[in-house]
Image (cartoon, rainbow, N blue to C red; front, side):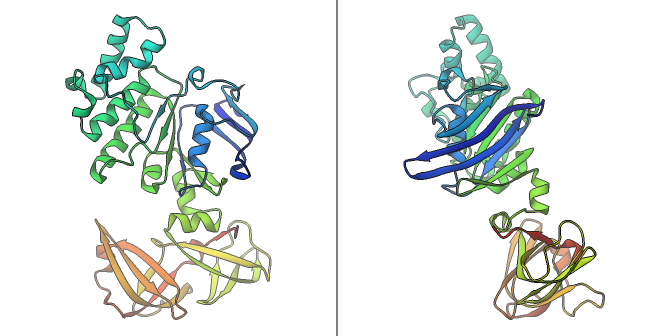
Length: 363
């Protein structure tokens, strides 16, 4: 266990009857980090969070907090408050009383409760709503109350279960900034469960990606985006073009993979699969280029036809199809695409440098 480890999952399994919700899990959460756990519905991310909170007991293995096993500790004695997707605020209490509630349960005196609650109301910029009923608040204001109620006890770790899912897109972005700023200023460890890639990648120091109860990859957002470890991760992120085929000429200096789209060259960095095996190469859509004629230098080139285009802010995504029917995406700034004919049905060439290809595991 590393010295900066706050939480460790050691061989943790969770079953519900014959269904295995979380398969054998070993990973650590570091002190003071913002860790996001993400994956599609049913992947086991919320079950993992609930085991840490004490709302579910592991079927096997040990969960440690600050080096001490907490499997048998009841929820109220773990000091692991949770901000719920539904926020779970008390409608019969006003804003200040909601924030004071956890302090009251800990036996903190009235004057001290009020002082600490008002500090957090001010910090969350909701002091003016202190005497309001919860029903009179907007979604964003309720979110701030829920955060203040959890953080007023100054926990070592805060658990967040898809807390932004009910907010509109613009408010989500603002609250992401609030959450990240709070985490940095307080130094409290945040464990944040979400199905949203944009939320996880914009806030987290590290991201855990899960599928069917298994951790597929743990790393910084940059590591996962640039170097997905498995085909599942690459597919899940949706930011890469994937090509599968048989390996040939595998050497320390590089290799080729024979795919339906043609023979693709790959740089020699990292582990090289053996000759004759099946491998999948991923290429980021931002590293894939377009041209009217094939480049003269030695790069990977695939003929494509334009099937659609999508504009989001300063970037555009061009959707293309190979002669074999495989979809390819290219994402660029508008100025990079300005001189290309991008009408539906237009024939072009997609190309990329061999060094920009990355081998991923099939399973």
